[in-house]
Image 1 (tube, rainbow, N blue to C red):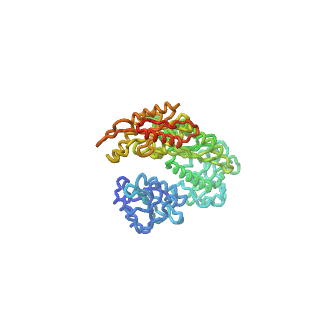
Image 2 (image 1 turned 90 degrees about the vertical axis):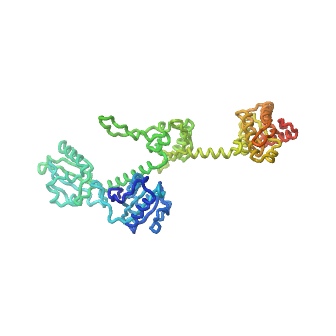
Length: 572
């Protein structure tokens, strides 16, 4: 199966994606469907998932492959998928691509597959398929014959010192399909694949000059112009008095080469799929050496593409450097942007995965260049042999910074009072409980505004809200930086005192808060004389709970309200 634009007539080529208006894309689809009344179609999202064609395309009435939720790649035979991937990558670059292949539901029929990129106008990539007139031709002289190998699979021939055939066995004629007259007296070099001729000549010269056995793997042309892979061994018998010759033994290895080509195709498919993934991938062996990483990993962890994949260009006039193997970076180099805590966490996860074969997901932080703080999700999975031995790990690396930021914002909103920005009731109670677990030098101040109902009744709820906001601001200004304030509801507030060593220090903080709330509060339309009843509770019993401590402060606040002086009262 092949992917190419060379065979598409110029009038059929769609304009580039940014130049394809809605009408043009629709007309291109309509033209294809008119020309091929037996065509089928399906639409895909940008990541290849099949979806119903949008109504804006106007393709109602044409057969649609009812495979919503699957990927277009899954519709074709496995051996045709590489061409589909090539076409998919091509259509994203050039807005149109064509390939040929067979559906897994109808493997005996070849289909023409035309892809149109209509994402900017209709939100999808449209694929139209119709039966091909004939099967695609082999891709050039290097295409290996995939038919069942000929029988027999071993043959011999004799050649003189100049390479001309002087004799061959019947197996040679059967394997290559020639008659004896076509072989005798002719050299075999001209039947060797052009890419392999240098190897044959080098081996031939060495066999003649040194007398040593020479072995090589080459492709030789059959009578039907197909190519057969053979392992060839040359023996020097030029010293034979009766018939000086070079004996060539050939073994048919076409089945092995077909398997190798299929394996290479699968490896190429896997490589391309991995490089297209939005996740970074890291493969480590059992000693934590880096076996593989994709380019996306470097983009996530370093903010740049994989530098070891890019070779510097030679200066003008300089000889180009010969390509050579690149050394994979170390794990330390790849993870150098992780924070110290993140590295300790990742190291512990790797240890457990390699020793126990467990799967773990962990979220860590990375510090990229230019002060970029990123949240990274690491999904670590063991690679285990059939014996259960862990031979390495695979780590999937995702940038979840936006998700983490959104999660923190939601947590913040859930913990804060929407009007004042102080802690809400649940949040301040949690803070008191945590402080009691960690310290015995803890106190709370319960604040309740006096006569606040008259503000809402006289000036309205908007004015009341403004007073509440002002009270919260005054509380924040009067308390220490280590303390926290929360709104319990209505006009009631709670201040958490951290690190207060005795009752006197707690009462001193309460008097400071009381003084900050006294006085006239003015707002558009009127003014209000602020005064608050205040109750103070200090930890004396180590086993006291947050609810009990706040209840004691609440009771003290009511005694303060009964006194009508706005002075703090200490809980009994």
